[in-house]
Amino acid sequence: MTLEERIDELTANWGATKKKMFSGYGYMINGNLAFGTHKKDQLIVRAGEERASELLKQPGIRIFDMTGRPMKNWFIAEEPAYSTDKKLLELLETGRDFAKSLPPK
Image 1 (cartoon, rainbow, N blue to C red):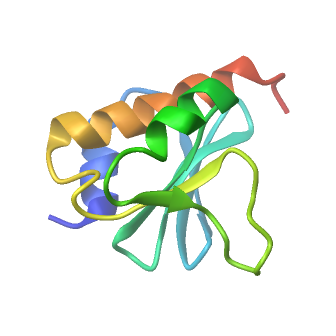
Image 2: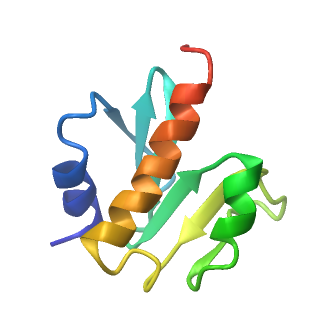
């Protein structure tokens, strides 16, 4: 099962809108990007500052930097960071919760 398929399955009833972007798909909650895929096997996640410092301590997670300019509160997760559904769901919930904390667009 692909990362995208796993995300679709785990978030089926979250009400997220899926859009093509980042050489993959972005998942919007209340119009705010919460998480997405990049190059099929990388997970992009948004997080608040407190959670961000926790994420960076985990293996396979680094700051999202596509253009040479790191994006604040955005992260790329690779295996082993989302190797189990439990780990993946935790990362997806992080992005969802951050997006829900923002004003709807």
